[in-house]
Image 1 (cartoon, helix red, strand yellow):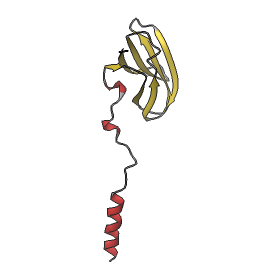
Image 2: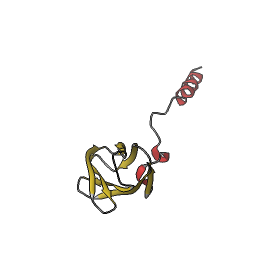
Image 3: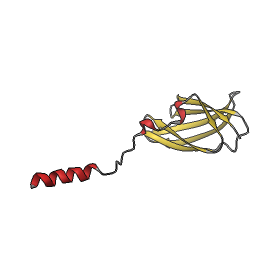
Image 4: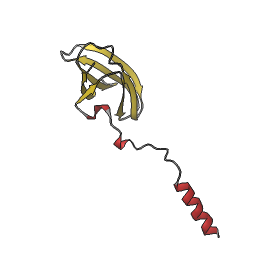
Amino acid sequence: MKKYIIILFLLLYSCQKDYIEDISSAPLFFDKNTQEVTDDVYIDFILPNDGIYFLLLVDTDGKLIAREKFIGVEGVNTRMLYTDLLEQQEIYLMLYNGNQNKLKEVLIKLSK
């Protein structure tokens, strides 16, 4: 009788919802060299550890358009990219760490 209760408990416990999301299949914004964007969009990206990071928007001539400083956490982070305010058709989004080392870069093509 005791082993049937244990088997029943294990069966019920195995049917529980997973609380840890598998991010290996989630699309990340910096995975491609070029992204096409039509409206404001949430971007997901992975950071190697907790700390201060910067997101920079730079036009194709190398002119800085915007810079955001934020405190990132190790793992997946999400930020809002407001593209409706931009006039350029192509712009680079760059991710830097607190030591001013570039970690990632993507060319964004805006379609309005």
